[in-house]
Length: 376
Image (cartoon, rainbow, N blue to C red; front, side, top):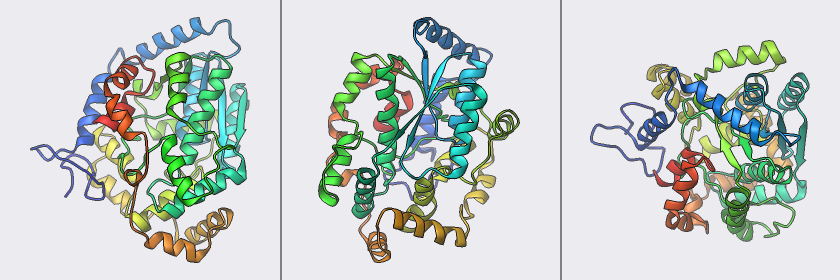
């Protein structure tokens, strides 16, 4: 069964439809449209926010922070924050050992061209390798969760140290969409639960993110999350031309392929083990936003996102780097399909905190989309 409006289908667990055959992700999209309407006032609103950021940070070395991966969205975000909003951001990168050469080149180019300071947090390799390997051994649908948590913790830890109150996020619900919770889930307790069972349980060298961190960075320090791309008419073609002309930025070939680990997860592991194509969420978003027709989107995702020869090399590279044998990988692919619901997480705690979490979203301490993902 498939949503009448977007591409959401039976590959998504817990997919629900209203009486018109429209899925819950389309409903969430409409909620976000109400929150961030595109009209004559849209971009004026982000400029008002930028003015407040300038005033709050005028005595600081940096008035804001931008996480950067070398991908299109984060690179344009840094460009927009510095060149258009005229802010003084610190660029922060989390290096998990799987950066592609293209992404590293893009990061260095954009920071140099924009004269933005870059801080890179290099993950402790042995610790990160063991934790990520434990996620694969668990057979879950989101083995890149340790990377996401590492990125998140790095940004807020750095903002806290520098007394920065505004962290910019490069997500756009009109192009990236809404990732199903049963596909990707992120919390520190989830990481601990999996690593206790399938790793050595030692998280002392990993920047995990717990509820205590949420309280520290959001409630006590008052660090807010800002998503500028939701305020503008964000188009991939236009953005890539701007970045190419202004920065010398280079495309890396596919959806989230700037990281070799994520490229492996989305193009090799998930399609084989779970029949999950994460491109479905971004193209569904673009269909809802009328940036592409549904038929055109279907044609694109009907084609593999990686060539066969390239896939073989990538699989060998990632397995060798994580010390996963070919036999282990075959066992992982044949294991029962599981996700965060099969492990200890903060999810039940979050459900009891629905109202305070909604308040955090209402006051921009956390993205509204995060609230919608967890509570619909």
